[in-house]
Image (cartoon, rainbow, N blue to C red; front, side, top):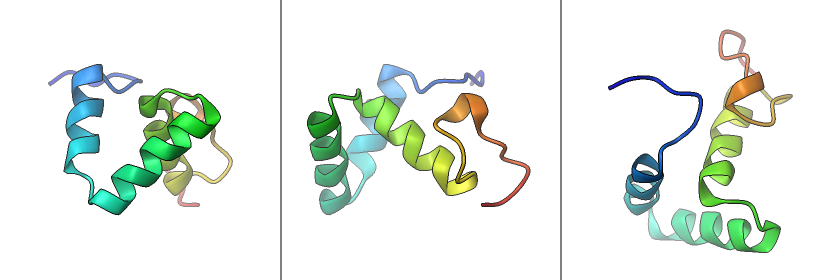
Length: 66
């Protein structure tokens, strides 16, 4: 599987479907509230987990925690 800087629509769908219901509902609600695509919400959540100063995968410094 090739690595990309963005989640594919298929990966996004599978990822969201695999989340616990309360997390899935929160992600979808935040996406609707902010008018961000679901994949952007997921990307931001994952990137910020690794790098508090990042806004997404493109500027995430994964080699340094927090």
